[in-house]
Length: 334
Image 1 (tube, helix red, strand yellow):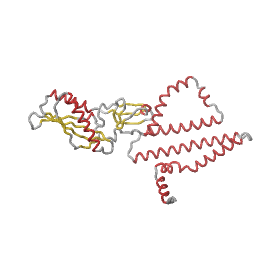
Image 2 (cartoon, rainbow, N blue to C red):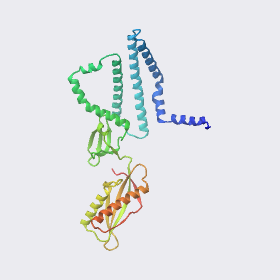
Image 3 (tube, rainbow, N blue to C red):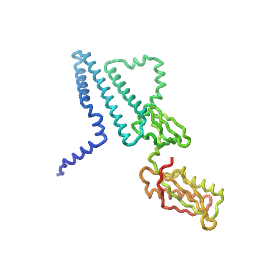
Image 4 (spheres, rainbow, N blue to C red):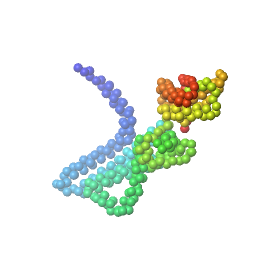
C-alpha cells in the first residue's frame, strides 16, 4: 500500500504557490476587484437568461440595458486592472533598477484601453445587429486611403507592444542588429526604438516591428576574459614581416567562436637571446554574466593557437607557440 501523503507537504505546495509572482500579481491586481467581477458575472447570467426567454417574452429594452451595463462594467474593470498592472510593472522595474520610457508606457496603456473599448463596442454592435462595419465602410475611399496609410504605423505600434512584453532589451542596453548597427538604446517608443551608435555617436531610429523580426544581440550582461598566446620566432623580423604576421594572426583567429576580433592585440618584443623575437597575442574571450569555465577557455585558446600555427606554416614562417594559463576578467569594452 502506498504511504499517505503528509498534509504538511500540500501545505508547502500552497505556500510556494502563494509566494509565486503569479499569485502576488493576482492579489495586487485582481483580488481588489473581486466584488466587481461578481457583479459582472451576475449581469452576464441575467443577460443569458433574457436571451433564452426572448422568443417567449419580448424584453428587448431590458436586454439592451443589461448589455450596456455589461459593456460599461467590462470597460471599467479592464481599465482598473490594466492601470494596476502598469503600476505593478513600474514598481518592480524600479526595484530592479531598470530604466523605463514614460512616454512609451503612457501610450501603451492608452492603446490597450482603447482596444478594449473598441472590442466591447464591436461585440455590442454585432450582438444587437448594428452594422458597424457597414457604417465604417460608408466613410468611402478616403477612409480606405487612411487605412492604408496607417497600416505601417499600426504594425510599428503592435511591434512596440510585443517589445514591451518580451523585453529583449531595455534602455541603456548595448545591442547589435543584423545590419551592423551597434550602440546604446536611448529610448523605446511605441513606434520607434532609438539607438545611439557606438563610435560615431549618431542617433538611429529603428521601427519596432522590424526589431521583432530580427535577431537582436544584447551585449549588456556580457563580459570578457583576456588570455594570451606567446609566439617565439628564431630570427629577427622586419617591419614588413611584422605587418604580414599581424594580418595572418588576425585572419586566422577572427572567425573563432567566443573571441572578439575587435579587441585582438599583437605586441612584438626582442628576447635576450640573439636574433630572437617574441609576439604576444592578446585575445578577448567573450563570456556571459556567469564565469566562463577554465576548460572552455582552454579549448578556445587551443583552437586559436592551432589556427595561427597552421596559417604561419602555410607561409613557411618558423615559430614556437606557448599558451599560458593565466587570464584576466574584464568588463566588456563598448
